Image 1 (cartoon, helix red, strand yellow):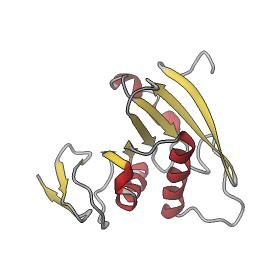
Image 2 (cartoon, rainbow, N blue to C red):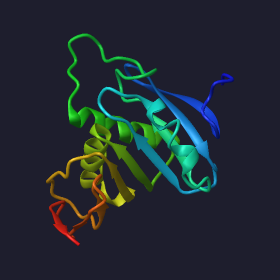
Image 3 (spheres, rainbow, N blue to C red):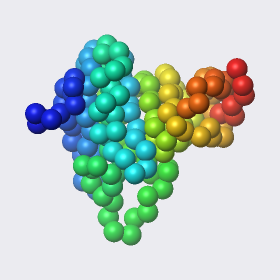
Amino acid sequence: MSENAAPGLISELKLAVPWGHIAAKAWGSLQGPPVLCLHGWLDNANSFDRLIPLLPQDFYYVAMDFGGHGLSSHYSPGVPYYLQTFVSEIRRVVAALKWNRFSILGHSFGGVVGGMFSCTFPEMVDKLILLDTLVFLLESNRTALTTSAGSCVRITSGSCRPTSC
């Protein structure tokens, strides 16, 4: 780690994937509840450098760079970047970290991908926290989220269709 590393940063990770590696950064307590941080479309894991030090440090935060972003490997030429592919990347990252259950903190595009992951694998996600993310409509079994405007949206059991709280 360099002298300019974000405050509280405990490690930089490089997780192997078939097309190269996924880069990530970790903060907080290794024994704390895990939180996966997902950046926006034109961003990278560094987006969380100033936010994470302001959050409770008894959690273990990992901010990953999606494939083709930040320090992560790009896909092979001709391979498209689809939302479902990014959902698969999350699955690979949490498998490498050996996480069975965790929370997601997603900013913008990262919130959309995190929402898709939560609706696809609801048994793996404790909480979904969205920052500047539009509400999405997918089918699953979730129960709560808050919009970037601070308004509460409740997800009823059996669906990812939001209703007001």
